Length: 454
Image 1 (cartoon, rainbow, N blue to C red):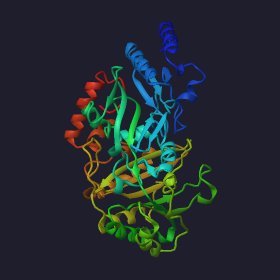
Image 2 (image 1 turned 90 degrees about the vertical axis):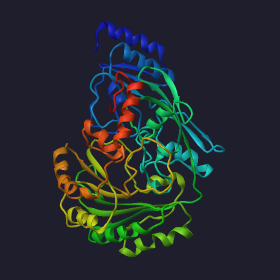
Image 3 (image 1 turned 135 degrees about the horizontal axis):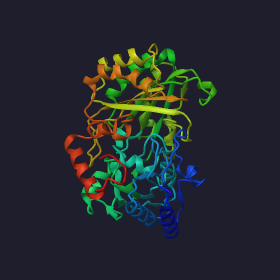
Image 4 (image 1 turned 90 degrees about the horizontal axis):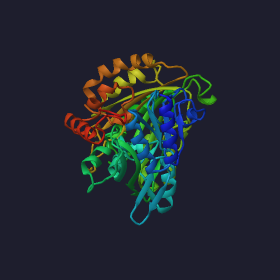
C-alpha cells in the first residue's frame, strides 16, 4: 500500500510521532521488524516504532483512517508468524522502569524484558514473578497469564499485575485496574491478545528472603529411573516447591554447542523459595536417585533465576515447533506411557519433552488466566534448521490421543503452541470465560483491527 496518498499521509504521521515511521520499501524496515525467529521475513505496509504512549495513539488512529490491520511486536520472543501487510507497531522503545521498593511495585514499559526488571528489583530483596526465560518480554508473558519457576509458591505472573495502560482499538488510552475498567483488567490478565496495544504495566514484587534453586543433568542411561524418582518426589513435596523434568535430545547441527550435539540428557529443574538449611533436605532424594553429570542446585541470587532453565535468549535462525497440554494428575500410568514413548529407549524427532509441576494451591485473584486446573504441564519442542511442522505434529499425536484421559480441558495460552486460531479459545479458556473475553474484545476493539484472538 504505497500509493502517493498513503506515502504523503505517512510523512505527516512521521511529523507527529517521536519514533521512526518506515514504509515497506524502506531499507531499515527489516531490522525494525525482526524478532526472535530470524527465519521469519516480515513485510508490513508500514511500521511505527513507538517511543511514547502518544506515538501509539497516533499510530492506531492512522491505521483506522487507512483501514490497516495492526500487529504488535515488543521484544522477547515476538510473533511466531509472518506479518504480511498492515501496520506493525513496535514498542521496544517504551523501556522506562520504576521500582518502588516501599510499595513493592515495578512500573514497566512495554518494551522491557524480565531480566531488566529482575536486576533492578534484586537489590531490594524483591523479585518479579517471571517465566523461566529472563529474555521473554514482560507484556506478552503477563497477557497470557504467565507460568515460571515459582509457579507453585507464587502462582501466575498475571496474579501480581496491579495496573495496565493500554491504547484500545479505537485509539483511546485507558487505564485498567481493580477500580478502573475492572472488566478489561480481568481480561488483560490471561486473555492474551486482541484488546489493544499495552504501553505500561505495574506489577507487585514478591518478597523472597532466600532462594535455593538450579538444575541437575543426568546421562541417558539414568533418564527412565530418575524420571520415576522425580515423579514420586514431586507428588510429596511441599506446595512451595516448583520443579520440572525435561528430556532433551539435541540435534547434530552447527547451531547447537559442540559438546551437546547428538546427545540425550535429562534435566531436573528445582526452585524452593527457602534457605539452604531448609531446602537441602527437600532436594536430597533427587540427588540420591542417580549420579548427576552436573549438579547446579544451591543458593541462588534472585536476579539469576534464569539459570534454573538456562533457556537461550539470543535470536535464532532455527525453526521451532511446540505444543502443550495440562495434566490433571501425574500417576504411574501416565508416567509409564511417557517413558515408553519418549524415554531413554524411545524414538522421537522432538528436541525437548518436559513435565512441569505447576499446580498451585494458593488463593488466586479472579482473572482470565486459564489452565489452572492442571497439576502438571506437559510440553514439547521441536527445533530444526528447516521447517518440520508435519513431522513434529505426527510424532506427538499418538501420545496425546493415548494420554487424553489424563489431560485437562484447558491449557495456559502461552504454552499452547501450534494450535489453529479457531481452536485457541476452546483450548485456553472455559466456555464462559471465552465468551466473556470475546465480548470485551468486541467492545474495546470493535473492528478487530488489532490482530488477536476473536
